[in-house]
Structures are given as C-alpha cells and as structure tokens.
Image (cartoon, rainbow, N blue to C red; front, side, top):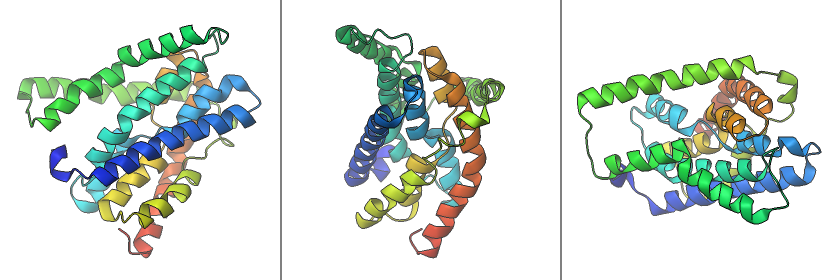
Length: 250
C-alpha cells in the first residue's frame, strides 16, 4: 500500500531527480555526442534503470520488505516512460526536425498511447484503493509478465555490440556519485537510500531496447548498453551497498 509509506519529500526528490537526470543527460549528449543518430537511444539507456523489476527484489533481500521502493517506482517510473517517449520522438532517425509542431503532436500521441504508461495508469489505482485482483486474473497477468523479460533479453542479446557500449556507460558510477550527497544531506536513510540507488544506479532496463527499436532510434546501441550495464552492475551495486553500509547509512 503506497499510502502507508507516503513521504512528500521523498516523492519530490525522486520526481525532480528523475527530471534533472533525463534532461541533463539529453542536453549534454546533444552538445557533445558527434553521432547525432545515437542521442535518443544513449540518453534513454543512460538515465533509465530497471527500477520496477530490480528495485523491490533488491530492497526485500536487504530489509525483508519493499520499504520505500514502491513509492520511488510510482514517483519515478511514470516519468521514465514519459521522458523516454519525448526524447525518442524528437531524436528519431526518421523524424522531420523542420516541422516542430508535428514533432510535438507526435510526442503527445506517443505518450498517450505508450503501452507501458497505460499499464502504469491502469495499475496504480489498485494499489491506492487497496483493490485485490481475483486469483485467476492475478495468476494470468503474472504468467504473461514473466515471459516479457526473457523474450526481451533474447532480442537484446541478438543485437549486442560491446564496442558501441563500453565507453558509454555512465549511470552505474557517475549518477549515484552525483545524487548521493544530496540524498544524504536531505536526511534519507535505510530503504529510502537504497531505493534512490536503484533509481539512479540500476542497470538499464530491457524496455529501452524495445522502445528504441519501435521509435526509430539506435536499437543496437541500446541492446549493447543493456548487456554491459547488466554485467557490470553486479560489481557497482555491490560497491555502493558496501560503501553505504560502511558509512552507517543503511
């Protein structure tokens, strides 16, 4: 139940932090990346982590409950998808950049019809209103959901090119290093701090590949970043957890 752990300061931090993360990486990538065809895919893959899939399991293994992670997911994950749609629409390789009005209209349409955003919108009321799905429906939805990640990983692995990604992974080290001082200064501790680690330092979600491919962006770069980030995250996440525990923060 999200209402039981609602913390306005934490919600604002997650929403503002997600916005700065996406827009900051987009701006810097647009300025400094020579190959402009990579901008959309790189920005999405650098900012968007596997918060929903990895987050709850990660915190539960540490604390025995989901802690503040569901609140982080509700605050950040919808923005993940909205910003990803906007960035991928404006950076699509087949986009007519001369017609700004058409691009904005297309971005709005993509947001309103994005299946992930629609899924979040459909699911959140069940948590807010404490509505339990019938076992038959819940089991069916769960079985369908369990096929999503393995299928996406098969597609991601098939398009992997390590050389395109190895120099482009910044989220695992750089983003936590930037965000943790602010989070600690604002008083976040324990599961809230781990939830923030998942928000900014988790490996790139496989959804990035699907959205990049479907929206005319660099899907090969996306798949390569996903694979490399997933492999390296076992080291970087362990490092950050060890550091936070050593400092007595979690």
